[in-house]
Image (cartoon, rainbow, N blue to C red):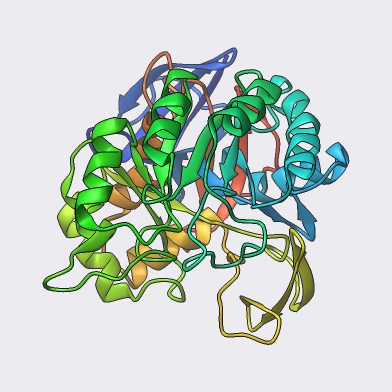
Length: 379
């Protein structure tokens, strides 16, 4: 049993300015407002306890990638984000050949079973050639029932999300196939019209992949996928909140329209997250990182990000002007709900004791997973 207190606590219902919580085993056993009647095991005066972050879209970090056949590399990528408060992370792949994707999925499956990652995200190969972004355009292709089924079968229940473009031939059938396999179908990297996007949502798509990025732009007589995704309460909206992918004013508009209950901040991070500028690989493509911005070498095309979710929280609170409670909901509760992770994502009795301790500057000071401190406790 561990009692932590003397600090602010962000819960789903309120921001407790001074309170405490009790951890028993792997779970949150009790929370309280005010001073704890007894001795605290850990006094966090001046700090804030928040639920551990949930990143549903990440390609790597710390010079390591999830796009690999080396499980050690994938493990190290997850550890980089763990140090920044992300206690649950999805490993995102990019467009590749069938054999490459199959081998990468086989590498990641055991890491799902070990709780290093909570699932696998296929971002491609069934995406638009026009809005391929940092995916090899030579490898993008329409979905076929056979290929979708074979890759899902290789994942054996560990593929948690698939991003595809709904305007492609066979895409609506693929969305239904993905949903039947208990994975989340996401709309992204798409030139879909408003109506095509609506059909995808009606077929079961429930996430918009990094909305505003790598999709047809919103126009007054051609609202495209952006408006269809933002206006539908069934859809969770991914947002990359680093100031490079989406202007802060547009992010504020997205939060105003969809609210923190539907906005899931994601990193879309590649191997350069938490590392220095330089040359990197994203799948088969060479990426150059300059001043923390990743672009396909020799182009202006942004290639993922170098973001961590704690930095996204700071950005949205300080620049995006959302409340701390709304920002935390968008990096914890909302993505947990979108991904069906019912046992985590908020500070509530019975939930997993996945916690991050933030200092007054909103930087991560320590991290707890399943009731155990996993990052140095130096508050």
